[in-house]
Length: 602
Image (tube, rainbow, N blue to C red; front, top):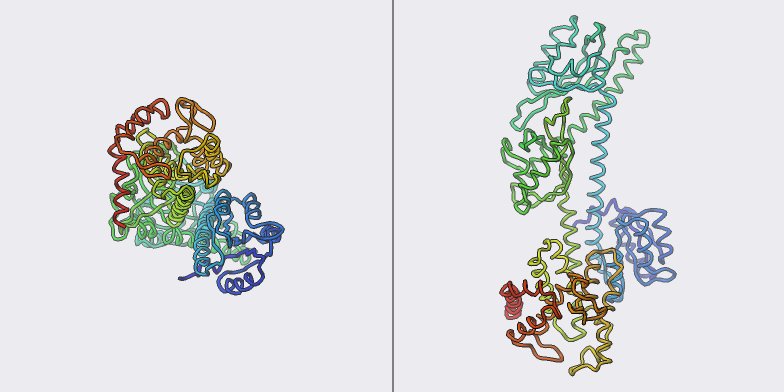
């Protein structure tokens, strides 16, 4: 695997084992730009504050300050800090603490080099992408500033009629914008200008080439001024000229100061060359590297950069196409178009990440900005659309979410394994909970979060003694009281995290044994005092538990289970949710059967 993207990355490595750290540093120095080494969390924190490395790799168990305490302090300084923690102890407690801190990379010791390099490379790629985005934005802002502050700008249509002038143009010529818009550029042409110059100018720009030269213009009061001019033809998707953009520099003073003309000429040329070079570099970057297009107010594309075509429309004639045509089918195109066009009509830019399909079939996630361009009357005449490809970053986030989901399932299975249950129980409960949430009317996003969190409903069982948890007979009142504490134990383990998923899991753990009539535990909540997430998971948990063998009982027949649930309506369970369960019983049974089929196919 190619790890070239690590060459510009700095790494802080905190490890108290000198032998381990010496060997690993010798290898990592071959890949990263710079590596700093600390022997405990306190040294690591000092090195982080001094050097601000791109990535931190730290052991958990260290003297003076452990790795997780150091990571917590660093994340308080910079919540986006990229941290990898490692430990020779594969304990749920460390994994849980790392998740709560927001650390997404956890490596077991001894560290496997390929696994470490892959993690470092993945993080580095994300960091480099972020830096490139910032650099691209900075280039664009510099270009805008240079053009606005240093150049006299105008736009004209194919016939030479003025469509736009900036404030510097008006100030130099003495005309107002309203006196210039719609007029031919001849309005500022000086009578003594050589006709051959204008013939050369028009011949050049109509052949789709840039024209550069010095022109004497006439001001409104009859005086003259001299400008160095750059005129650029703008082409549409069919390579037809749509308009001309002119950039000028006032060089009147330079031309008139004959005594110091050589010095002034040299200085002015230097400024013009620098500005033109920056503009040319920007124009080249814009056309070849920036993903953008021009559209009308309805989204029809008039021009598009090479980068846009390469990414989205390779080999496609985009004439008559809308930028909304490339949206993925999973996006609500009609709703999005209305929402975006509403912002455009009110002269408000719209920005957001959208899912697209390229002509090659690749799914892309693009940060999309739609910027309305208004005329002097305040009417929107076109829209500039800029896009930034964040596909890798989004896919990385999805990968992190999937990793979190897997960790949640594994932690849920740990709780079930201690009580000699199968991991299939938590997976079935997760699917049942999502289905019931959707039937209740919750959004896909909220239902998915309940699905991901519900496997943790009995995680508190890790704190219950084995002799009680796996007792094959009925529990004594004192034993049952101890068993009931697992809801509070689970809540105490999970609450307080900055991760929304763990917050949801803590709610479910605490409330899934509460009962509608107030006879449940641990708090004896009544009716809608019980959080909706707990009420949903309670039905899913009991339905699955009754249908499968447990250490203290055999699986019940389906008819007995359904009779029990009906009898428990408005006593144990939320009656509205239970009605939805029975109305969609076939869908729940399909989920159960799919797990049985999966087992048979093993």
